[in-house]
Image (cartoon, rainbow, N blue to C red; front, side, top):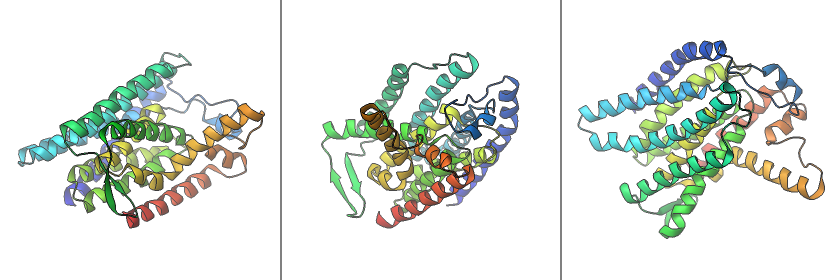
Length: 326
């Protein structure tokens, strides 16, 4: 536990320092948020707030995880050190795709950003590479843990590989949709990643507990600037990164099904969008005032802080339940 706490604290302070450096740079180059005109009117005042703040988390993770890799290597823990790299590569890869999208929209002023087909292709390639590495590189097997039953089932490989890829893509998209209110995605993701890190400690997967601690510190450091009223937003750079982290850790732990419980908030955010689109196409009417569903609560009179507090508390309770049923 000592190394995990140390890495968490280092990651936190590194991210805070990076925030003090990067946010003024983003502001100087006018890399600002573009708000939807059909969105909550209270959001219009956020127009121009620096975004792409996920860069802070990416850089902090690279610095701290690399430091952990070097430390573990020189202390004769080479295998543990090497196991950190695939998870880091997946999350950085997703963050880079989000960065390219943000860069095109906010710096190059291409309002469409990265073409959806190109974005999905990039995410798919990285997801396939990670899953193939887990199965054929680390030989972790295709057995998947079933919460409550507390046992593993062996999934045929031709089913497991597409299933695992869908977990990564689905989780990433869900976290991306959750990012829409000051501090929401970062607060909810912190709870989920902390839960997975604790599971890593319980099941003695030290690579997960070490990597998770680095990420928790980075997200908490980012949250210092992202709480309402936010001084910076994470953009797709950060939301795709966090989705990659959550899915990568869950698959490494063989517990992707647990995400249905502990990541229920992002799941509901996604379901609300799907319901809204299908219902609107069929009837021309809306089920919710606006989706993702956090905007529905905003338009129903909830303040941003209340939405974040309730959604985060709900996630915290779900994570506790998740720890009980594993």
